[in-house]
Length: 143
Image 1 (tube, rainbow, N blue to C red):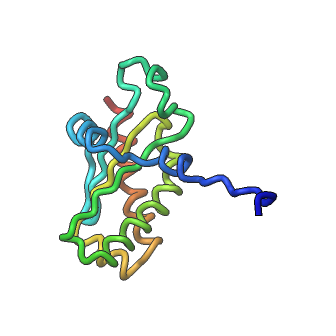
Image 2: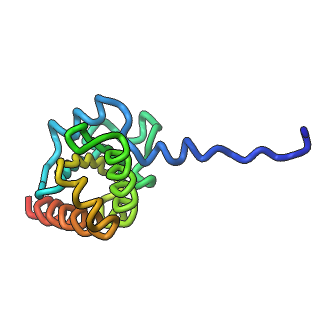
């Protein structure tokens, strides 16, 4: 039994790509830019805003943008909310390369997101999230 190597738990690597603390969400909500459509609202804010970057040592900009999700009970029951969150995570994985690596992003699902998930699945989520990412990048470069 002791001779078998134990697989390394990937938890640390996966969590780095996500916002988890309330303060991180608040900072993005209060100081970030927002764009929205019928299904989703996307907030984005650079995390290396001016406090020295690598001093905390938690997350470097090499790790890519971090995602936070907010899916309220207005979206539906637990099964519906979990489906929407899973689809948003998958859609974000495809869009993350378009976003600056040093950004934190919060996606808020509106109640219509459940219907989109049921009707169109991942394709619909990718299309709607991609539209918001494009709009956020367009507005961000003009300032």
